[in-house]
Length: 85
Image 1 (tube, one colour):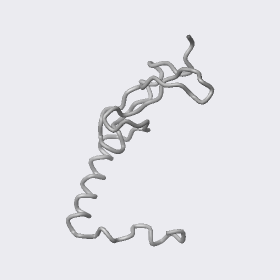
Image 2: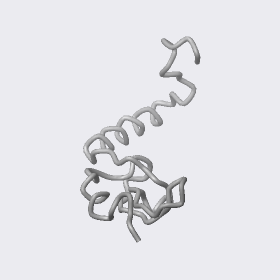
Image 3: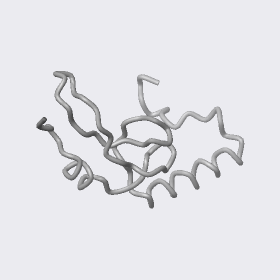
Image 4: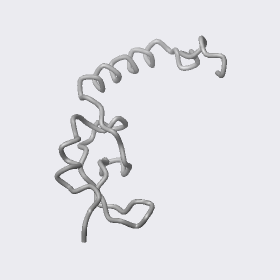
């Protein structure tokens, strides 16, 4: 059986952690739309395929989000400069 993306090729693309839960990103065996077996990177902890994010960026995001929650700004809209929001 020939894989479109091998486990080794998929593992080389991993540079960080899950963008949702900061869990470990691993190559997960799956099939693509044509039924061909392949590997996609994903997080087993939150059970989703994911493009990883650098761990430093994730830490900055969590710190900013914590500050935002502490100050009671839940209703603040960060996207007020966008017409569609």
